[in-house]
Image 1 (cartoon, rainbow, N blue to C red):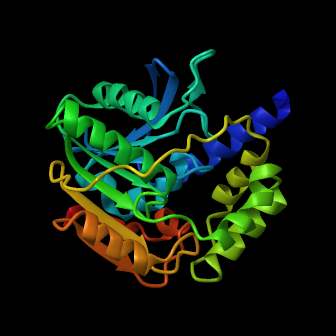
Image 2: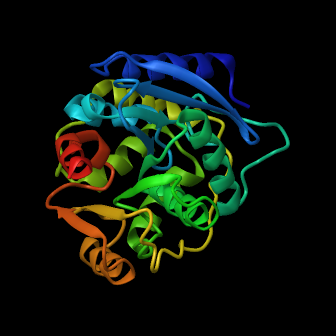
Amino acid sequence: MVGRTVRASFHAAYEEALGRWPVPVEAVDVPTPYGVTRVNSCGPAAAPPLVLLPGGGATSVVWGGCVGAGLARAWRVHAVDLVGEPGLSVPAPGRAVRTAGDLADWLGVLLDALAGGPVTLAGHSYGAWIAAHAATRLAATRPGRLERLVLLDPTQVFAGLRPGYVLRALPMLVRPTPGRIRSFLAWETGGGAPDPDPAWLRLQDETAAFPTVRPVTGPRPDLAGLGVPPVDVLLAGAARCHDPGRVARAAREALPGARVEVLPGVPHHALPLTAGAAITRFLSG
């Protein structure tokens, strides 16, 4: 059981990292059937809505660099803490998210609460897997709900994970500690990115003691032929989780009309932290 002092320190680290965002942030708690979801929103209220989903083990705070690179000038940004993952979202007792369908239902309710019209949905890593599953559901049941789907170095969408990556991550996943988390991040980035913000690193340290539920796993989303909403894919060229070239080829084959780009030299976990200008350019294109 996680003690009160650990939870208090997590909250303090979260608020410290969020406080480094260069724009005013409105924190909103959105009720859903699967729990209360924390969303950190910024940017002009009348701007087009952009919903951002972080990767597994991250929080909405990871998008601060992208917000600072200009997203909050052109969009009404809604950065989400995934239910069951580290963050300030609170899962509902007795209503766990267990399947990709549950995640799609959760996200559909959340999108309705955040914006009435079409939404641009972007996700990184595991967040991209969630976004892709939700997009297929919405395209079939509520066409027009999504304006655009943006997948940022998606995992388990177009290709599987490299076995060596899984083996390297296993100790951190089985028994997370601050040391194991930092060691894994240092290995994955491999010196190919600037040093992360110390406040963000402190928050990642605190996730080691965060009471999470088991991440949802499942099949790859069937995006073949998905033309509405349009799909864009931005890949981290130095990713160790998968082969970026292979993922790019698979994405172009599955989605002939998609825009697929690879950012040379950018590691997987550093993408939302250090490639804010590239992500802003990509979303604005």
